Image (tube, rainbow, N blue to C red; front, top):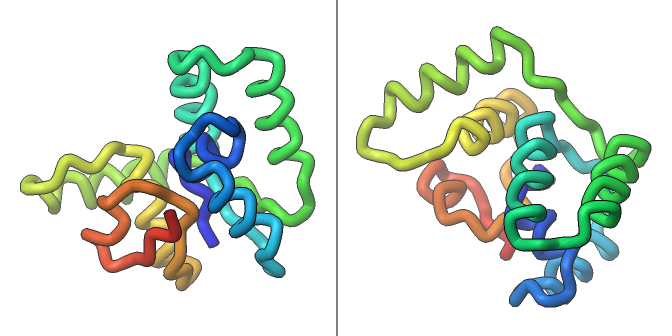
Length: 130
């Protein structure tokens, strides 16, 4: 399962509408998770914009990095370029670069499900769990 920004925001903060569902999905999942550095950067930015407590957000991200069940891919130039190509190839879509990196990684790893509220994942043929 890929951990996307919106799913992690739901998990992180109890006032998010799908908080309980995100907590249940992650707590019951008996598998390894995948995320990437662009998700973590976006998570910090969006959480702080929503006025989540900064120390809690940073501690959460550090916990993700230290969690042996979460593999974090560090986006390099090649992955960035592959994601850019996907964006260029989809001029009718409003995907973010972060989304495009997720789609590339999910295809490379044969991952079909994402902890996300983002409909763009469904547009690319993936299963949106929230």
